[in-house]
Image 1 (tube, rainbow, N blue to C red):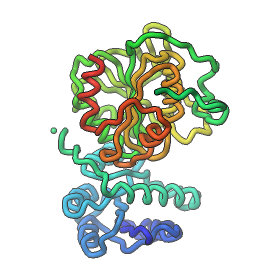
Image 2: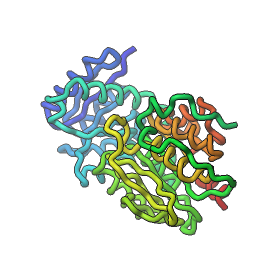
Image 3: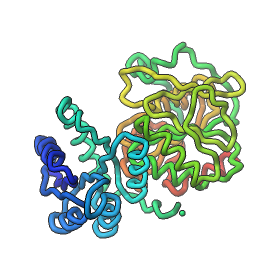
Image 4: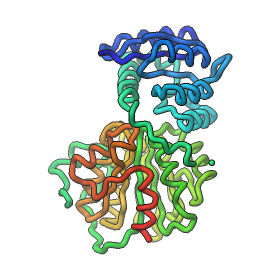
Amino acid sequence: MKIKVLVVDDSGFFRRRLSELINADARLTVVGTAANGQEAIDQTQALRPDVITMDYEMPVMDGITALRHINKQSGTPVLMFSSLSYEGARVTLDALDAGAVDYLPKNFEDISRHPEELQRILCDRIVAVSNSRRRIPDFRSSVAGSPQIAAGTTATNPALQILAPAQIRRRPGASRDLVIIGASTGGPMALQEVLTKLPENFPLPLLLVQHMPGTFTKAFAERLDRICKIRISEASDGDVLRAGHAYLAPGGKQMLIDSRLPLRIRVIDGDVRLNYKPSLDVTFGSAARELGGKVLGIVLTGMGADGREGARMLKAQGATIWSQDEASSVIYGMPMAVTKAGLTDEVLSLTKIAPRLCEEIN
């Protein structure tokens, strides 16, 4: 049975073009369109779609207001469209906080110049969002045995090839120097849930890897910094790692560790072949090379398997890996990949991660 999609946008051109792209996929069918938020609410009740694509700036009723109504009435998963501007990033974060499952940048030029690539990304994202229907967590209102590195891993994974030289330095000892948390789809709200529960005097620095465009990460870091007790900032090349401070990897870049004391962050462009910028594999792998087993890695909700191969490197050095459980994940992709590979030491519900983290580190 095809996944039913409702397309909501005040632009008639965008509604038509989006419908064409969606209907061209054998998995999907557009069952209706709406030109504003109020029509979206009415059409959702009448057509009962499986997924809604939603613009945020519309007449009569904006997309976020409509999203809140839909989330209360039916819980239909929503994929938001947003601009790549700083203001667009802020609105997108508000939409995620209101209950949107995921978002895509709204770029009219891509629709005309790269229709095949856009269709693939759009339709795959709609399918993933549809699978999240029964996994949308209820935490939004809460905030006012070690496998060795697989043979040939670094030869086949460009995310790990940038970590030259190949020899990993081992550092014995059970103490920890760093916490690294990675996420993708569903990650902004998951990170918010974890980080808002950490005390101001949290004794270690944290690195955050969230799949986001470059224009979004600064706004996201600022948002987290306002609502968290610990400090949060977008990472810059040369930042010294400090206890009680979380550093968010800049979108479009890769974040590495420089182990020369004091510990510092390196921010680089990375390999053009990488699907993810930032990539959790890259940050995990760098931490394994520079800090050995003195790392606690946490893999949260997200599509794909980013983090799995970096987790192999960390585990080979004696580091600890936790992953979010399926029930509390919006998309059980990244944590599932790590768990199925036998790399997870603990599987935790999202609301249990912060308390467990404080217990473990203290």
